[in-house]
Structures are given as C-alpha cells and as structure tokens.
Amino acid sequence: MTEKLKPCPFCGAEASVSKLDVAKPYGSFEYRVLCSTFMCPCAYPGAAWHSEAEALTAWNTRPSVVPAELAEDRVLILAETIVGEMQEEFPALDAYDEDEIASFEAKIAGHVRALLASQEG
Image 1 (cartoon, rainbow, N blue to C red):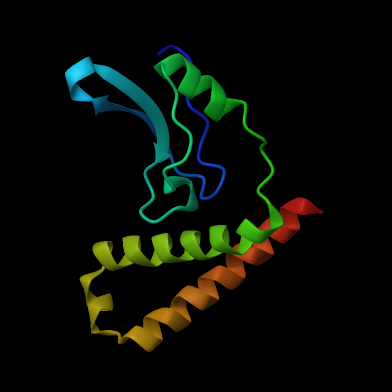
Image 2 (cartoon, rainbow, N blue to C red):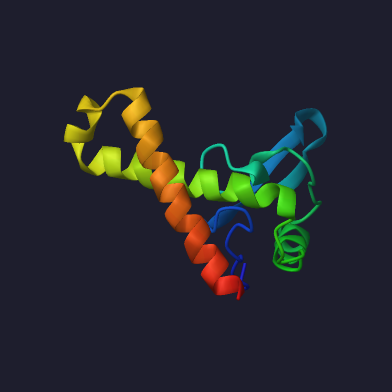
C-alpha cells in the first residue's frame, strides 16, 4: 500500500485496513478500514471491499464533512479518549468517582466544542 490512509472522519484517529477471511472454504477475503478508537462510530460493520486498494480509495475519497447528527458523538468520543488516556498516564485519577470523571469529560467536551466552533468561523 503506497497511498496513506486519511484519519478517521469521526474522531481523527489513525486508520488501518483489515483483511478478513469471510469464506474459509473458498479463500474469499474482504477488506475494511477502521480507526484505532474504541467505540468510534466508524466501527459499525458497514462497507467492505474486494481489495485493499478499493478499501483505501473508498476511505480516502469519502465526504470530509461529518454529518451534523454525528458531530456531538465525535466530541464525546474525543473527550472520553482524552480522559481514558489521562487515566492510563496518571493512576491517581482512579481515586475519582464516576460522577467526577463524567464532569471532567463534560468540561473537556466543552473545550473541544469551542475549539471546533472557532475553526469553523
């Protein structure tokens, strides 16, 4: 694969092509592109292609605008990812209860919304 995959349109994470064996007796494969973010909306098992090149081209030529109804999902995924990575880096955050973590995620989501809004204008 010489062309590089674009980042995920929902969360901005790095993406990769997966080769799946769909019919073992016949040696048939399908290719899907998914990002590295757990629970990202792009993880919905939708389109599959017959070759790695087709998957890469379809992923890289998709519309770049995130539909309005998914914009909030994108913000929440980014906030949850940031908090999750911080919890891994700073074990002391485990002392916070679920409500405090949810409040922290909401504050980060607010900052992400503000950043995205500033880039739109």
